[in-house]
Length: 452
Figure 1 (cartoon, rainbow, N blue to C red):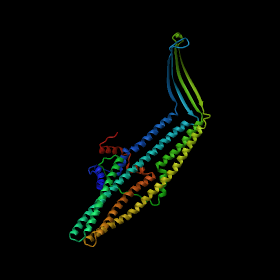
Figure 2: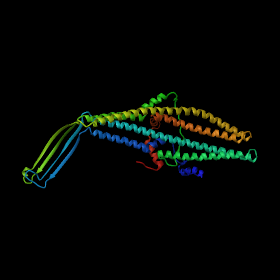
Figure 3: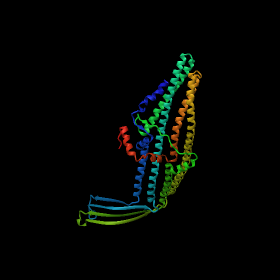
Figure 4: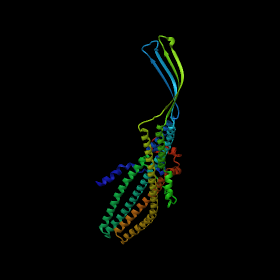
């Protein structure tokens, strides 16, 4: 029964295994597809579009409004003083301004909101692309683990055959065979679990980028980076000047200032100006000679100011100031968090680089040790326990080195992400926007879908 639980997810995800004839996606390919297909990025783009539309709304407050009107009245009773019907029509031009420039402040705030949404779009895009990279390296890492487990199964099967031969010659006790079979069964179970994890990792990546279920991926390129030791202060400074999240909150602080100015405008007079042209006509049934039609031009000026409102304006301005203080505190918290993210990513890179050096030496020793112990076992100078220990050491060394190499590559990307230069570097390295059209065509060809 437990074996069924292990096998069931693999069976369910069997259709998601790699197809040798399917197109192999590199990490840059996945970046390009994510830009075209990500719903989260599209939401951020729509928010930017909403902000741009809001700019038009704010600009309309700076310009006069031109409107037309018309009225018609018919009476059921007539007399010399009341016409049978009357009608009028005209056009008027109206403008209303607050004397402290509230409308202009609102327009500038709309422009700042657009800039803030651009930063939000960059932040969302960078975060999503990093999630794609993390999912990609997760697939690469687990796929390598599966390969290592399969190699371990083959070694154990070969060793089992050797033990069976020696057992027939009564050169080893039966416990050696039992120990080998137990080790082989344990490794086979680990392989099933790893294949299950690989299927889930592949499904996760496919969901992020909308890939076909039988996709395959290309092996990642080994990162070639310059030395980073001792450059932590430089990285933190870069993050504080480049992170889109910080720039967005800084824009929010400017918008909070604008909001205070807008709230304070309630203390200022509002000037309304109106000019128009009207035509009025009245029809008298009893006295047709009294029918009249008049044309007129007019202008009007009105000034209105609130004198006392029982503390409404004071309370509103106080709320706006408190909101600004909250934004300032959020900016301070964000700067601390980002500095901590940079330091964490920096330390991961340092640890991974130093660990890989030691793990390469360990793997070299483990391979030599396994070959030597296997030869000794063939010559009767080592028992099965020595072989199992040597095999376990070799397996762990291969797995740990593979995971460390993938972790180093992802750690470099994590350090770029923490500094806020991850998306910038992607665009510089792979020319995403220049190749977006061709990538979209490739994507539609591979998925059989045509998107507008």
